[in-house]
Length: 313
Image (cartoon, rainbow, N blue to C red; front, top):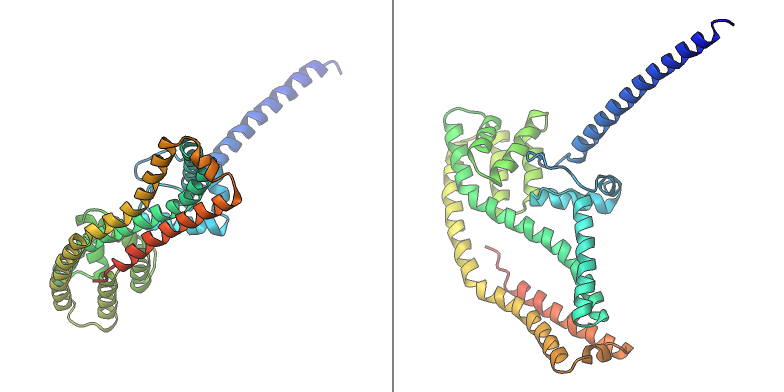
């Protein structure tokens, strides 16, 4: 018992050593876990080559476990945006709150509610627009892509090697999408599955024709070079046709946007000439119902104009 103080000090020091070791192991394990979660969270998406620090990691982690989060993740993957589902949802919610307070302060609180509901549709429409924009850019690169593939296969390279070479030579978005296809082929995916996922991410008739040509050529053999040369000429002609159609329909698209903007302009005029008129108009259930019907008709007009001006080339 004479050595009790010394024994106590020794046990205390040993406990401190074990505590330090435990903290070190815990911190390193936590860092490895976060790195693993970060890698797994971007499965099916383009790697974050910019090294940007992700925000709202907790929200993103919880959101990915839901069906809504998985659907948002697939949409973001098709757009090529450097966003996580958590960041997208937080930004959309912040935008909805800003719309509600700003529009409600300018017009009336009821219009703030309508603006927030419109913002929910606008968030989804933004992703669809980004996906369409990326698809159009990819379609514009298809003639160059088929030309590179034809040259590579004519030189005796396999289709997998030709796709990897095209991913290095082409600019984005074709370069990113083909790198994703090359990565999938490198880890054991079949050519059919990798190209099929590409066609699902960027749906277009031109890409479906290209994928079908490559898949059939890989299955049954045949003259891939001749098919790709002919396809290159066809894609060049379709590219010019699409450009002409887009130019012809530009005025119709402006009209579709001008129709609802005129309605908002009339509301501003009414509110400027008679202050408080919008508050009185939306102060009753009948006024709110009529205002909702009017906005719904504007939305239907916008959608109908866009639908009628949509030409499939």
